[in-house]
Amino acid sequence: MREKTMHGICFHHIDEDLGSEYDVAPTDLERFVRAVVDGGAVFLKPSTLAESFADPRIRLAEDAVCLIFDDGYRSTLEFAAPLMAKLGVVFGLAPATALLLDDQRPLAAPEGSRGFLSVDDLKLWTAVGGEILGHSHSHVALSALATSTVEHELDTELAIYAEHGLPAPELFVYPFGAHDERVRRAVAARYRGAFAGDCGSVAGPDHRFDLHRVTFRQKLLPGLLRLDWASLDLHTHE
Ligand SMILES: [Zn+2]
Image (cartoon, rainbow, N blue to C red):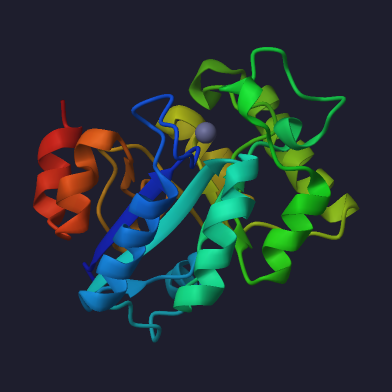
């Protein structure tokens, strides 16, 4: 069994004008990505992580970072996509499929005024090498739903990706990090691994449906720029 340290780090909206502690400025995002590249850590493609669960011959780097952009904000395409080409890295994007479709988007969409990607935008993301992770159709806490509704949430998003010729996501991100045994079983029947919340496990195929994911907040920025991973754990278990 390999126990490597893998840092799943999740960003939301990218904007110079910080409207929430979860927002990141484009310049700070680029500073962090450069810090990882210059600091000798490795950006792990979500697809490589997924493959490593099935093939023990794939050795993950000692200090690997998997960057995920949550929920599918339009700013992801505007600011994160160009960074991939500029710095030669690959990021994951975890949209909720209801937020991609004008006629499906709930009024209660998170940060609804900021603009979400469309299906065509998502095609542009994959065209420049970006990867897609599952994040459910409606973005609700799956552990609060009946098992059949959980399965419907997952099958709906997979059907939408298939219908639009987008690649089937191999990894999943639990909305709000919420999962239980039923949810993990439904996810395990459809994906090869899943990111949980801040208290998930840090690495290893035995924890592949409970992967650690730190949600970016402004107060974490200094530690991220120093690649001080211990400071992230300190701040997130509160
Ligand atoms: Zn989300």
